[in-house]
Image (tube, rainbow, N blue to C red):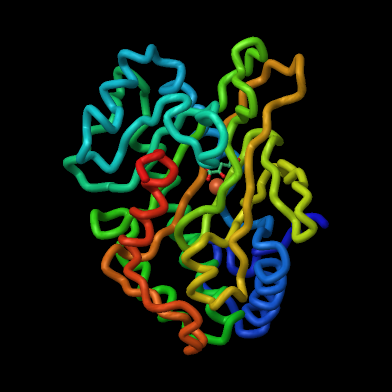
Length: 310
Ligand SMILES: O=C(O)CCC(=O)C(=O)O
Ligand SMILES: [Fe+2]
C-alpha cells in the first residue's frame, strides 16, 4: 500500500474555480483515496514550498528560545488563550505510551486581541503564522467542496459547517510541531515522537520537513509516508468519518523515533480543520448510522483523552 499522489492543479489556490469535468475527476480520485486509505498527497495546491519553509523557520526560532520565554505562552499561563505553546511530553496521543517527544505551538484564533510572541523574540512570527493559516483555510475549503462532490452531497453541507475558521466559534488549529534531536539514553520504554492516534475533526492538512510519519494500513501494518517537497498530505479525521457514515476512513498514524545514531530534528505543520463549535453533525447520507453530535462536545471529549484527563 502507498499513499496516492493527486494533482490538485486544476483547483489550486492560483485558480478562481474548477470546471465540472475536472471537479468530477478530482472528486473521484480523492474519494477513492479517502475510502481506501484515509490519506492523500496533493501536489500543485498553490501553497509553495517557500511558504512552508518560511513558516517552519519562524516556528523553529520560537522553539529554540529558552523554556522561560516559551512558558509565558503555555496553556497554564494563558488558560483562555486559544494560541499557546505545549511543552515536550505534555501530550500522549496514545495513552498507553509515555508522553510524546514533541513540542508545539498552536494557533486557533486570529482575533486582534490575541497575544503573540513579540517581534523582538521572533521577527515575523505572527505575520507568517497568520499567512499560512489563511492559505491552509482556503485550501481546506476547496478540498471540502471536492469531498462533498465525492459523496454526492451539496457542497454547502460541508462548507456551511466551516464558516468560522480562525474566529472563536471554531477550534480549527494550525499547529507547528518540533521534534528535537533524540538522545537514546533518555528515551523511556515505548516512548516515540508522537503516539498512535487518529485526528479529531473533519480533515487535516500536513506539511513535513522529513520522514518519520507512519500510517496504519488495513492489514494492520504501519507504512512510512514519504516526504515529497511541494505536496500537502491530507487525511480524514474522526468527525468526517462519522459524518460520511464510515465511507471515508480516519486511520491511526504516529511519528516514530529516527534510526539510532540519527541526531536530526524534525518539523511539521498541521492544520486541523474542525466544524464550527455549535454545529450538529448528522450522517450526510441520511442513514442515521450515528446519532447527531455537537462538534464542540466531540472535540472536548477527544482532547481531554490526549491530555490524560479522563
Ligand atoms: O508531525 C507529524 O508528521 C504528524 C503529527 C500528527 O499526526 C498530529 O499532531 O496529529
Ligand atoms: Fe495526527
